[in-house]
Length: 411
Ligand code: C2E
Ligand code: MG
Ligand code: MG
Image (cartoon, rainbow, N blue to C red; front, side, top):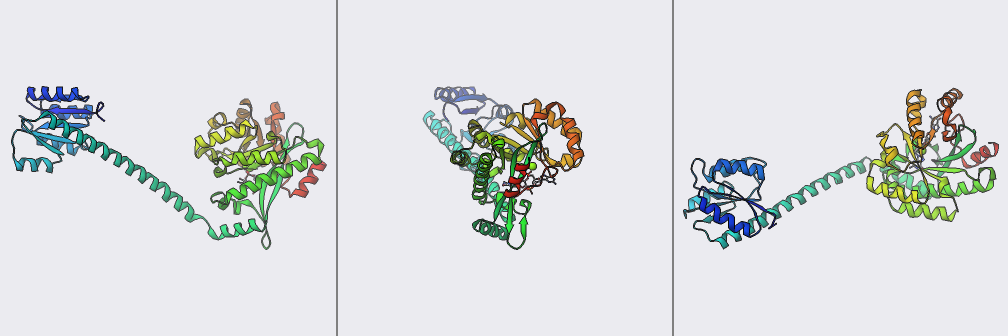
């Protein structure tokens, strides 16, 4: 603190100002002086000193009045004030403390005593500031914890337990939906989509359970299982169908997964185990996933990018849409959300798609259900058909593994 701390000395006697000021400057403090109450208040607001030495007896406005004014102002009330007085009077001292002074020095003062008191109060005040910071930090942590707790409370724990059991009983299954190139009409890859094969309720769509998985610890085992199963399946198709040696696999990853460094190691392990070219694996993340812990996510994306894994922004246009994300993040593909196709917002589809293409990305248009929609899209993107892809019920619904194999065979 010393060497940087600023001290304001207020005294109407020039001699006192001079000796105090010299002594404190010589000890490394930055010193300001004021010879009246009015001047003291103005200087305090302007320079925000770390401590004030304040004479009590001054004409016009005495030290008590100055102190009261400073203690009322939210900006200046934290500054410690040490009173200086010529009179050795108990009532006066009591008064000084009662209006917020921290200490009292008698004239004629000993310079050593002044120095010792100044140092002590600066230390106390610095500790108080640290304490305040700590309290603020704890309060904000408390808010985060409360939020997390309220998120937890919204979790359907019955469903959680059921899913846990379903995982044990291997009731989760991957379906695969083809992604088709606009130019060649050939399948370029599949998107892996999870399903729950329930013994009584039949096939359950992820919309009924994926949120519970993604917002709990279940995402780690399930996420890993999806990556492993999808990669294993990809290897089997690439080997079985030589025409599809470049087939790709798109896998959805959640916010939690993409901010966990162990994802990188796991993907490396799986790619190595199944000898899959990393560029054949495409990780689909949503816009909100990259809104989380930005720095961390960025590092993970870049580590995966280094080994040439591809990234795709999923459902683009629905979340916290920011075109900046297209240049900020190492994204290779942009999936235009299916709601734009459903609502026939062709101008938006064209604008988003053209921008992505001009930035060197590929595009996938989701949710193509009719031939008419496909024809419009091919017309919109007729100048960039090789980089444009479609996905939707028109080509195929998500298919179980066997049906997907048959679909590949026919394509
Ligand atoms: P998504 O990644 O955007 O997947 C596309 C969704 O659109 C799929 O829904 C698909 O069945 C559906 N779809 C495809 N074509 C059409 C179409 O022409 N018309 C209509 N109306 N819908 C179409 P699905 O399989 O129910 O998946 C819903 C969401 O669940 C996925 O959206 C994805 O966010 C999430 N999800 C699915 N599998 C996984 C997974 O393994 N991990 C994670 N974290 N999320 C997953
Ligand atoms: Mg997806
Ligand atoms: Mg999508």
